[in-house]
Length: 243
Image (spheres, rainbow, N blue to C red):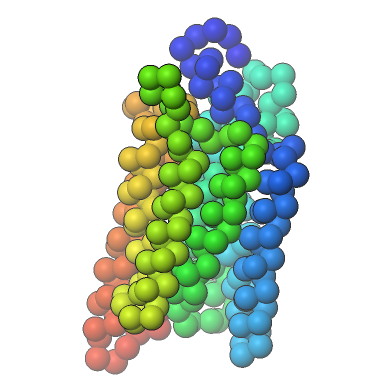
């Protein structure tokens, strides 16, 4: 990878959790929780299972694409590039990818009811479990500050705990109904944009990382969608909605 200014960042970025059995186990646990919930929910409408798996496929595709666009391409000349590319993925790509996958699945199945509130309540759980795996694998770390490193993974875990508590409270208080998923995307997008400055990720795009640009785009799209949903909710006739 050379000894240029990007070499330390690329060396750290190349550390991927693919070989960590703990990471794999926690990822599978998170998937199992979501699968059980949506399969049970599909007893009332079989299309819900298809919506979930559409979101899952979109999330995996978005996670891989975001990684390749943001930093994977930097390993083009790395001798282990295929292993790195296979292992690399990003939560920041999984969220908009999953959103897109859900919308496509809804169009394909003709399902028009909102599912976003359910996703918003469940999402923090697998993301928290995934970060425990990151801790075990030693990836996704923070920049050096003095003789210490910023606890990037621990900060992400704390954010997910806060998100879960907030979404649980909003559900019980019936606040922002049918818009909580958008709110989650907005909040995480803004957080991730700011937090990236403290993470060890390449920032070749105007001093920003690819993940920061994706975070901005996701937050902007979710803001627009939330505004549209608010207008739809206020409409006297009621419009079919997604999310």
